[in-house]
Image (cartoon, rainbow, N blue to C red; front, side, top):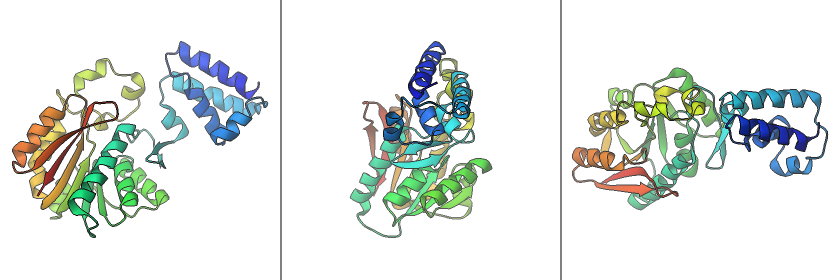
Length: 284
């Protein structure tokens, strides 16, 4: 079977399975260990039988619901490669916008000040922490997560991307409070999906990605409420807090931040698709 014939088979099979037909190309490109240009130049080449067998297994696994990123073992984020597995949430493009807007706000509020302390709470794959450190090396970055294996993968991603980060295991801000740490910047993409939403969500997400990183109570706001109880203990007098939120949740998170920090400049930021995807508080 030639490469293009294998792709045609995969495309048809995935459509029948209600999956993205383009996933076949990503899987085969990975299995053939080729960049996209080389891959496209080899469409009429014969596939090695072993490669074809591995490709068929991967396509069947994705058709059964396993995310492509878990099959190939990585995802791109902010131009860098991050290892992923079923212990971590797959990094999303929306979270790249959280990083982009946080960097803009840091430059505006702090300029080129050195020694700023930043924490990424619930780091998962480490995508936010690693990216912030590499995009702004003068930051001192701490990352927390409640789950040991998740933290181990985040540490591996930091090492492979050359980012020096202090990793601490613990529940939300508690490990930072217990150490008496104070921060200039707190960022988080916490679980924010209401538990009832599981009924209509894709099984690719609900059957494979970790529920502790997805769901947060009846209205999805449980973690934000806990943040408000704990943030005053770790935030400095001049600081930035930035959250990713679920579409439609910004008004509630805005109100929580304003109630906790009445003097703060709180702002909802919309993503590239026009959804209210981030809420920032600037404390001056």
